[in-house]
Length: 172
Image (cartoon, rainbow, N blue to C red; front, top):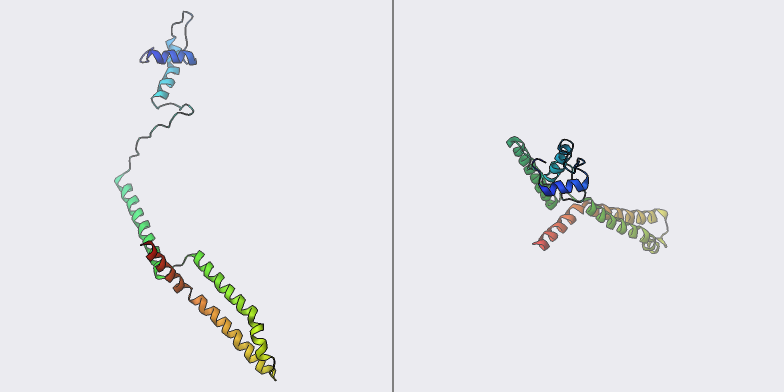
């Protein structure tokens, strides 16, 4: 056969890719198409055998304009990441996870305050002689609890900013 090593021909005969005449000589006309596939496979042009390592692909050619656009896109993404980091440090951007955590703490504090309200108020209003006086004490305590909760919510950004500063120092 043309341009094929003896070992390749012997392997092709064994695998049935090479057609032989009755006298055991190679039938070149019928064997050539099969051998073309076989040798192309060996050179990376044909289908890969199962379990064989993947062939390296030649590098893609990219235009200068496309490369510049990709670099610009990367720079924009990096700049955006820096903006996000700066916003987090100054407290204008807060992670949802941190806000949820602080809101849960505020909720727990509010819940404790509300559940202990009867215990705190009962001794104060037990001996009062008018409903108006009792109402005034209950109203005052309720407003104090709600104001404390509102102040806690308003302080979330500064609490997170303080946490972020502490984290930044511990990383250094």
